Amino acid sequence: MAQTEALFRDDAYLRDGAARVVGINDRGGILLDRTMFYATSGGQPGDTGRLTREDGSTIEIAATVTGETKDEIIHVPAAEQVLPELGETLQLAIDWERRFKLMRMHTACHLLSVICPFPITGASVNEADSRVDFDLPDANVTKEDVTIRLMELVNGNHPVFTRWISEEELESNPGLVKSKNVRPPRGAGRIRLVCIGEEAVVDSQPCGGTHVASTAEVGEIHIGKIEKKGRENRRFRIRFGSLPAS
Image (cartoon, rainbow, N blue to C red; front, side, top):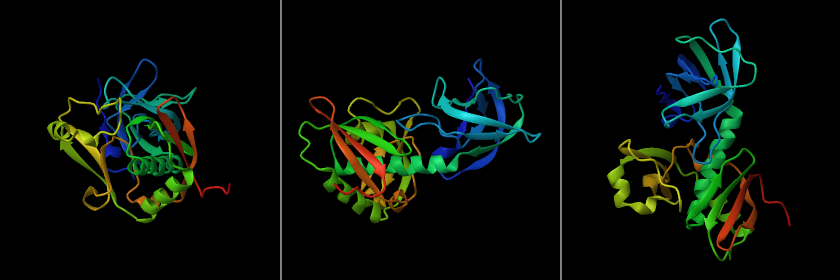
């Protein structure tokens, strides 16, 4: 099994760089020794972009996924792409405009979980319309009120950063995990936290995704809709831009 150095875990702002081909799987997926392409996980879709070969030709990447483990990152070419050779050095470039929207949205989802401190039952990060589902029997909140509180956090320009803790530290502080049904993967000995605010005063939770460096970079967002999904489930939809006039 090939392991890839996941550069995005330490620097979400890397847009391009060089990497060496270490494997091609039986479906034509490309494995590299290192990558800034984020692989689909935790509700955030994987990156798209292109790989440029030594002869100048390009390979369009339609998706990035994980293999048997989170450390096996597979770059999935679009249809009818010529595959590179093992050992070849490629120049990588992600679709930065798309990635940055996903980073902004993912951070917004974390902010929403601060405003709505209820168990999370599901989430999906997308470029224009993301969602977070909460175990919330009585939704006595309005999209207008939640939007105001979201924008207060955004405009607070709070720093967003990551740090690592041991699995034992997570066990001793189970409140860090906000998901009702999903737990962070174990076995690596450490857990990555995404923190918001000085000394993580706003939020701290396990997450492997990519985020902006400051809440101000999220920009203007609003809650487009609060939907009832079952007896004890409410779905909050986050969208870019200001709240439309009712």
